[in-house]
Length: 226
Image (cartoon, rainbow, N blue to C red; front, side, top):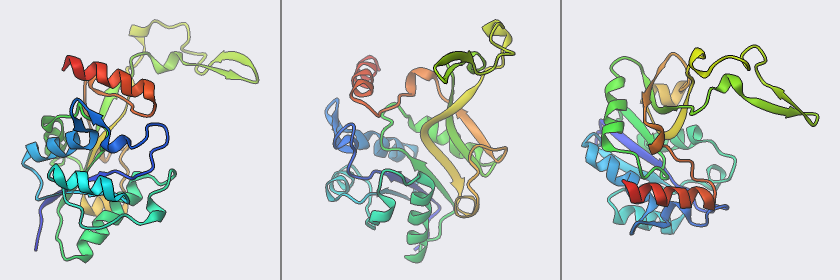
């Protein structure tokens, strides 16, 4: 069996700050369902898999149209494991099963405001660079950031603290929603935040961290306005 493109959605069990976050109900459907649906709507993927160590998450993922061809090992399901090793494990496992993969997209399970069009833009960018990822702008100039060191307030960039916002270069950051790459790039050197990658800009109102109950409440408010 051969494949062209795959989507991998990491979704481990054991979320601490928001229990069962990946399958918690949001507007009548489990959170992970939004990512699966967005991937399906792109029509780009031969295979959409969920990498999880949790049987209940795997069951829900299959109900919404994803596949779970393997169980993620415990050593890749703790609080400290990054997503790159998880993606590499998924790719190695699928390749060992005989699949031939061209490009792969890692999509987080916690981005219900992500659209199929966003993912498609990331795929199209691979004609220019071997990597692409979702990004957005900071809502305040990072050059005017402050810090507290040894109990004392001080600017992080003293040379910029008195400058007007409009005179400072706009900064962007990882939006934490999806990451595209060729399989070779994923398995060798996924230097996502380098000249090898193209940032796909998303509007700030569709980028939401989801780490605390306060984040969840804010997301519910955003979803009610979509």
